[in-house]
Image (cartoon, rainbow, N blue to C red; front, side):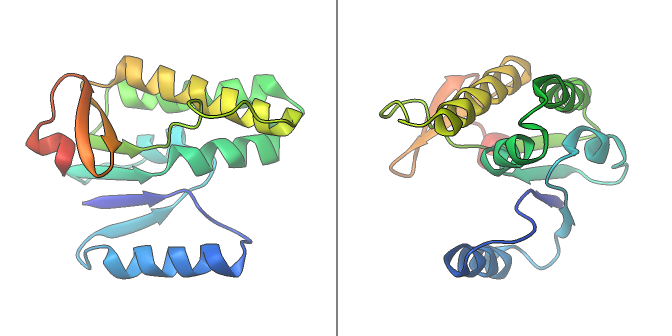
Length: 153
């Protein structure tokens, strides 16, 4: 099994503690790959795994804005590469993301751009996925397909 982590680089102490906790909770026999930006090429280079977990698209969207915020076409190209890699994956892939579009519209431009970008990524990935599961209060709600053993990991 392979765990692809998208949170890299500088972060506040609170986030560093969360990262450390996640590392400690991860099964020891899983291989971890750190890739915050080029998920499509990273998936294309994986040849030996029966399951990949990508955690998470929420932080991936933030990194896209940080690196390509002034060049929307570069963000779209990066998302296109991810979606292309998901069409014929080398194994089962579970993608973790957050739904940030259900709350208050952000007051600032960057917040709205982030919300819209993540919404677009989530929609495009969901269109390709066999199963889409929304977790609410720790309970799975099947949005597309069913809540299967594979969808639960």
